[in-house]
Amino acid sequence: MVLAAGMETTVAAAEKSFQVDPERVLDTLVKGHPRLMLKEERLRELKSQAAGDPALRKVVAEVIGSADGYLKRGELRYRKVGPRLLHVSRDCMQRVYTLGLAWRWTGEEKYARKAKGHLLTVCGFKDWNPSHFLDTAEMSHAVGVGYDWLYGYLDAESREVIRRGLIRNGLEEGVKAYQKMWWRKSQHNWNQVCNGGLIAGALALAESDPKYAQTIIPAAVQSLPLALASYGPDGAWMEGPGYWHYASRYTAYGFTALETALGTDFGLLGIEGVSKAGLFPIYCEGPTGMYLNFADCGGKSARRPMSCMFWLSRAFKNPLYSESEHAQLARRGAGPGHLVWYVPRSTMKIPPLSRDYYFRGDVEIALFRSGWGDPEALWAGVKGGYNQVNHGHLDLGNFELEALGVRWAIDLGSDDYNMPGYWDRKQGGRRWTYYRLNSLSHNVGLLGNTIQHAKGKAKFVKCETNVSRPGVVIDLTSAYQDFAKKVTRGVALVQERRAVLVQDEYELSKRCEVAWGMTTEAEISSDKPNTAILTQKGKSLTAWILSPAGAAFTVESAEQKPPQKSNRGIRRLMVRLPEREGSVRLAVLLAPNWGDGQAVTTTSVKALADW
Image (cartoon, rainbow, N blue to C red; front, side, top):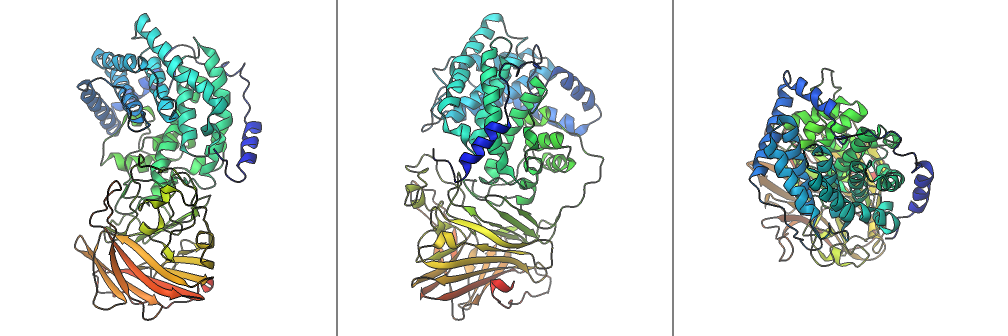
């Protein structure tokens, strides 16, 4: 694993700043069980609170309903998909949490008996697939919490089988991993998941087998700052909203285990950006409920209940996060984490959200909207960043657009992780031959009909938010270095936030085709070359080419052949300028047809430097 530029310094700083004495780390250990995630005192508080809290009663009913469903499920089986056992580890974790909570809430033995069976089954597996360590970490978490919660129910023999399985397949592998595994020095989701899972497993056995906690906790405390710093400075996550949830969920698990078992977070939650992490899913959600989709996020990925928002609200005393989650739970089902981290509805007045938000960091994000609370509002999101970021695509400058309750400009999302070379990210790597991952599928400019440079970087040089014409200007030169001396893109909400202007400017170093592309599910028609009418769900949007004069729209198919996802019915609205040289400006106005009698007019084009 090659560390990113400057990361060696970051690793050294973390190892120096967060030192934990292995001999003293368990001095504050809570004795007895359960001590992980949800202690008996807190459970009693929740039971008392439920009588007067209908939202909490709904959460409890949904968790117990899920547990009833798990009672009918068969046993877990050791079955890998490609190189991963991860789906089995996650299934085990979900079953153990859900069944364990149902038993602890109701006292009905059927739930504990089923959970015990799952624990014994996975502890009889030959291994937990340490070659793909997420699998081992998540299973260690599941078994650790199950052992802790069911400790008083388990007979001595079952307890010993589970203990030995957790040590053999989880904690011993974890101790070895801290000596050699790359993830301990990573800045992305693997860090939180692996550390968080091992923390839970080690603390479950901290009385009977303290040596594992004495090794794992200090190592995790040194490792975690590397990933937690990735939230800085504003709470964004470089791997996109989907992996924000995965990373943040395990951040919550790890720190809850530390807090409930040891009473400390070792100062790690004071790292810049962590307290703001809950803003990211809130602002990245468009009016349709779908996220700004980047990195290996699922196509048309939508906001859904995320219990770690309750944890963030509790950890940082921020009711905005819990109120946002309550709004989700009013429409969708709760999971076990919602009970573990439950926060009641706030009696405080929540300040209004700003219409626009700029997330700084390694992958900069700008979100703009015409307003909140309107499902037909205009909304646009734009990203910068670094094409080598974990799970990244060649999509610097990509934008997505919603209006009238429709997403017009889309990102297709991830493809099958098991395709050959999916993780080969180097320049010329096989990852970039896959359509969904390279530039040809994204809403970006193209030079010479080629993809962006795999090591390209993009920086926001200007971002104005909460003004009459909010927008961003991005320096994309690094991504197009083979064809241009300078490349900039501007995206702005114009005409009182009723339309979006996308403007690209190039200083070409060699003669080549210049293109502009937007991926859409809409039907596309045209009555003249420089306009296109997009229609979808009974709504319409007009696209105008403002510059250069004489340019025309064309429509291309985004469909692909197996083993790639087919993208059936997806189109590309294109502008292609053949064989250009020198300075080129390509500007497109995207104007929803609001149907209110106020026509959106074409917008005057000026240089991005004058914006």
